[in-house]
Image 1: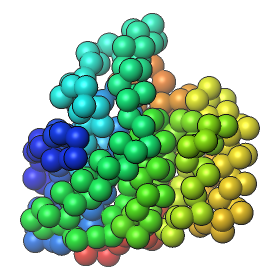
Image 2 (image 1 turned 90 degrees about the vertical axis):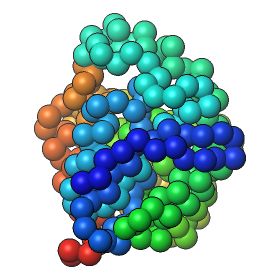
Image 3 (image 1 turned 180 degrees about the vertical axis):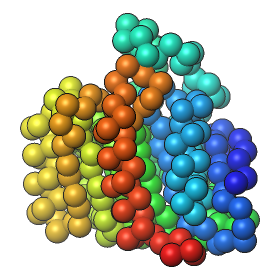
Image 4 (image 1 turned 135 degrees about the horizontal axis):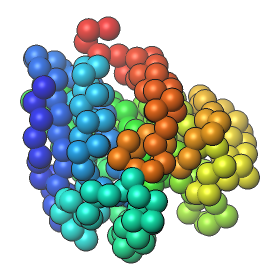
Length: 253
């Protein structure tokens, strides 16, 4: 695989990103990988590479590029719940800066950049997001329903709030297929929000699956944090690859 850090020009500056392209001529379908709140780091590079091993070109941008280049925080001790909470608190202002308008502008730049790479398909693409990345990935697919044909939101946060720009209010725009993996008893995505999201998807006749992972905590895929669950991580990979295979098959398929 070709693995490199790249700079993606956006309307608001330059986003550093991790790009992984499989060996071979391609063209390989593109997958945007939206990070969790702790930013680009070795764990996310591993995850992006695992998707690329299936024959996808993966772009994982630093969504916080307006505030800092990667690494955006010291993530060496996220397995300590207390330290994880402190780091999250320091990153909160960066999250608040990334509003719907900003992620919409950025996503267009990410899609254009990915499509312009050697060996990468011109589209359509898929998107996967973790934690806050799930929130922003849902905003992305509703903003570009013709360009993004599949979404996987994994322990996504605040997907169906009472706020006027809550992304569940826009799901009728989705033309592709979506998958939601919810952590059990997730403070960032409680049952009332899950119910609200599913009702909106049903009403809009969107092709979707929404599943609760029993016993899993918010952030369960992240092996470098205290929330990690090996069983839940394994399940999410199976579901993600099922979604990608059915909506965006690779040349080998």
